[in-house]
Amino acid sequence: MMKKAQKQSAFTMIELVMVIVVLGILTALAMPRMERDRTQEAADTILSYLRYAQHMALNDYRENPMDNKWQRSFWQVKIEHCANGSGLFLEVGADKDYGGDIDKNESAIDPSNGKPMFWKNTDECSEGGDGTVSENIFIYKKFGVSSIEGSGGCDDVQHIGFDHLGRPHVSFSGSTTPDYDSYMESNCTFTFDVEGGESFSIRIEPETGYAHILEQDAS
Image (cartoon, rainbow, N blue to C red):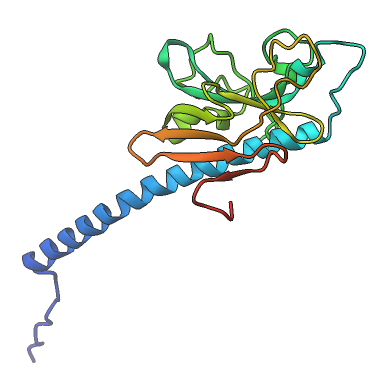
């Protein structure tokens, strides 16, 4: 007795083409979302570093009446260019020896990996560091952040520090008189550009040092 041939279902060429088209549309819709997510992650990360520096300042009393240069040692966030235009990096630390720069042993430790948040602007950073420092500080390589501009209370500066009361200061790295002349008296806004994405701004308020992402009041 002959067995009936079983029909085998399969996609037709039209159905395959339709699947490819739908996947293409979904991918196109997802791309802007991915860029927005990266921009948001960059904003959240930089905001957390600012709050981290303020937290360190609140827990490390830097005032020293015996030394006129003590204001140089405020805990701070610095954003600098790597050598040969290889990107931007962010540093958190305190210049405790008043040397003009934050040394590796003066840097904060990244809580996420236990590594120093340190780099030198004389070194390239296209590889995301050398394995001995936190890779999270290389904001160009990690997020595509290509530029920063300060305005208001931090006009034309790319760093900000905090005193033992959490108040923000600018232009304190060369201080020789502890007169709090570096105290930031008006709102500071840092605007960051992200390659292939949207720009975002972080505002820091005077007196309290409260930092938040603009247009995101809950940040």
